[in-house]
Each structure stands twice: as C-alpha cells, then as structure tokens.
Length: 235
Image 1: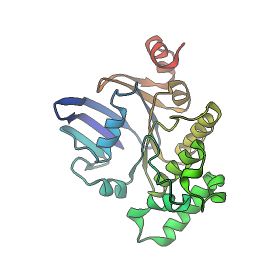
Image 2: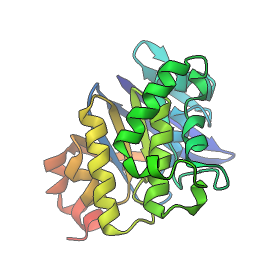
Image 3: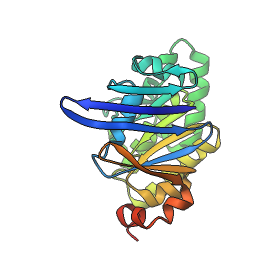
Image 4: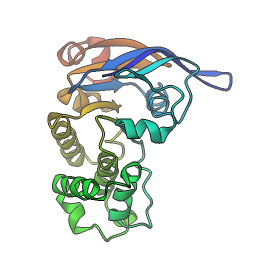
C-alpha cells in the first residue's frame, strides 16, 4: 500500500536518509524504531512531502508521492500526526480538529460525520471542544493531534512519537486507541522510541540507525532479539 524504495534525503551536506526501503501493507500496523535523531521524523516528513527526497520513490498504490504537494498527499489519504503535537494552543479544540479537514472543506456533511466519529473515539474532547487546546493536559492534547489527523480521512496514518512526554498510564491508553484505529481498517506507520509499548501492538517493525534501516521483522522476532532488547527495551 505504502512503499519506500531506496529513499534518500539530504539536509545540505548532511545525509539524513540513505537508501531507505520499507513498506506498510493494507491494514498493517508497522512500527519504526530508533533513537532520537536516527531518521524517523525525516522519513515521515519526506513521505508527507514537507521535505523533498534526493532520490528513490515513495509509492502509494500506483502513485509516486515524490514531488507532490503535502496537501495533495493528504487528499490521497496519507496523513501525518507530527511529533510534538503542533497544535494551535489559543484556538479551541474544535477549531484545531477542523483544521485537519481542510482538504475536504467542500464536503461539509462528510466532515460532520467524521467529527462525530472522532469525538466518539475521544469523548473527553466533546466535553472540551470549546476550550483552548493549550489548556488541556498533555494526554488530551495528544488526542486532539491524533483526532486532527483523523479528520483528514487517512487510509495511511503516520504517527510520529505519540507517547512523547506522556505518563505511563496515558501512554497505555494512547496505544490502545492507536490499535483500535488500526483494527477499524486504517493502515498505521508508527515511529516510536518506546519500543516495548509499540511492539506490543505492531504486526511488523523496522529499526533505523543513522538514516539506514538496519533490521526488520515481525513483532515476536524483534521483541526477542537481544540487540533490540538491549538498545530499546532495556532488558
């Protein structure tokens, strides 16, 4: 469904991604593991069209996303929830959510239906929909960020470090929601440093180091891999 073929990315003279190849098939939940600075966010920003690949192809079905505008990529169904949430803190929860539906602004009925689905997934946001997003707790703000991405009607959802800065109980709840989103039919590519929580809900995973994919496998093989456990799980 989404395939990266030998993708490279440069920031000036620095090579951020070096020949990255990976794929997420229809209905999969695929985890991208790596330390801070390994290249996880660079992969997502390149898929989303925010950064332009220096080489390779990013295929979504029969389309090559390289060279498309970010809005076109969202319209095709590939939507990113960025690291750090990137909310507008002074705007209401509802307005933040509706920003995610901008590419579908001509479909008011569809957007209302999608909003109802998002608020059903995150009931607390229905109660706080008129509150400034910046007044919410960290976990609630992450709900807004995920909800805003869902308003874009993703077929492939890119989640970049959704557990960042959250308490353990909130992390558990967040990953339960991500699993529900996937089980409802959305393909998920999840970038995470919290390997234990991420692998528990994953079908497959890749490990990235210094802009290169260095390992891949199913959930069980990576959970039981000694090098992965030492580097990312702490066991």
